[in-house]
Image 1 (cartoon, rainbow, N blue to C red):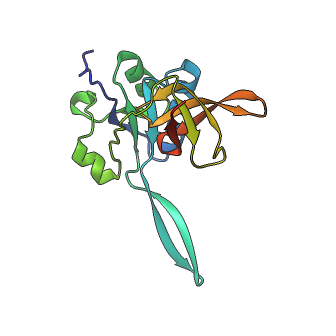
Image 2 (cartoon, rainbow, N blue to C red):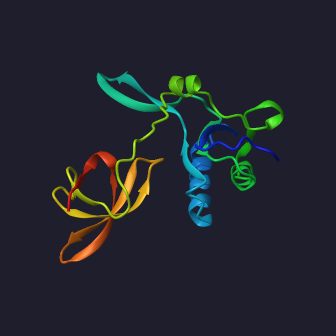
Image 3 (tube, rainbow, N blue to C red):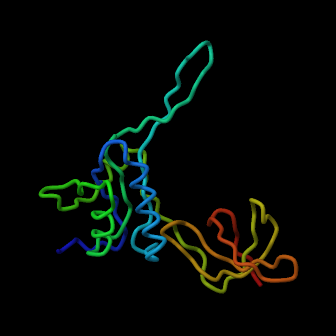
Length: 178
């Protein structure tokens, strides 16, 4: 099969048996973990919205699936990623002409509430950083890995007398001049 080879992963829609959306999501995520495909298949979502119901004078918040029978998958479309998603139990195919996967457009993503976030990477491997927020606030360390797609980096933080690899959001750290 031939796919458009984009430099960014795209969101695709997979059709599932109704009621199997969460099982399909869990199965795809388990397969990605098992096959070590985190650099090809990034995220699986079942679009939901909160619905507030009044019952006996109490507010009850329930999640309602926006599109029953569908999951959306952020991935690079390759033969292997296509195979993994398509052959997941409960998946009947991709949405597109003749089941040829077609990525969602920017407008469709916006309507789903998904924004294609791009991060301006101001960090390099080896940079010294200080944690600004979260449980590791005020710890410092050295950047060992950068995931610009997810807006995260891994830094070895000095904790309890030893270096500990810690994954952090870009906005949780600032570069410090050594």
